[in-house]
Image (cartoon, rainbow, N blue to C red; front, side):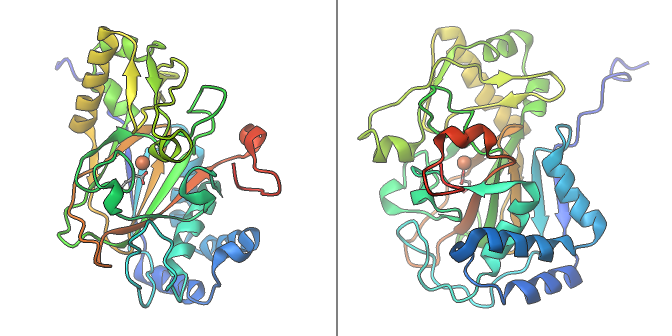
Length: 339
Ligand SMILES: O=C(O)CCC(=O)C(=O)O
Ligand SMILES: [Fe+2]
């Protein structure tokens, strides 16, 4: 008998969800009539729920299961979604575009988000907007942020600075990334490494180190740039991997992880190498979206060429919490979704 006969099968960590043409067309027909959602976001989210709830039950359940169970895949690749009839230029300054006449893309993004939880904004990320435009920005081309293009954006999860010293607590549970326009060369790839796959390929000693509070996370690039005048703002020492073996949580700041000793540094290097070895790789195209569980795994982006000519890559993104209760201490007064 082979030694592998009783090894548990590797869990399926990528959900591929193809929307049938007739469902896409029905979604499009409704979404094209909807107004700009931020005018009354709770009304808009309710309306999107009505529209998306009419999808075939199996399709709807796959998206709901993605959001509600610890044992489901960490990344969902949704294809054949509706797009706007006419797409204006990609914004050059980080968005939003002033020229959008219809809001199909926003409806797709927020409709999918609403099946996972509630979209929330953070005052220090994209001015607190709920719909983020992820576009290359010349001044950030070499940064480890979503404005970058020239550099590989390392495997990370999207974390949020919090005065408690723990940056994983307030962070989004999910990100939704929806593609409005691909990069002109078609090479910009998004990667997702699921913590279950990462743990399968790492040795015991490395895992023990990664599960120890030997790492300090730097606050996101936007926070460091806009609030801290460029200085690092480090978290308390935290582990990078936590939780039960069957469903571990992983966290890594994009803007720098500072290991406390040499063993932690080499474990961090092995973690990034493991991510590259196990990651799912997707080239997002218009009408495609990625549902990203921001706790089950880490994501990354390949380098690509930005031209700053209005035809650059354009994604829209939400940050989604299943529940705002645990972050109510940081809610901005007078706002129900801004933290
Ligand atoms: O551009 C991408 O594919 C991913 C960028 C990213 O990490 C993010 O928007 O959080
Ligand atoms: Fe990210």
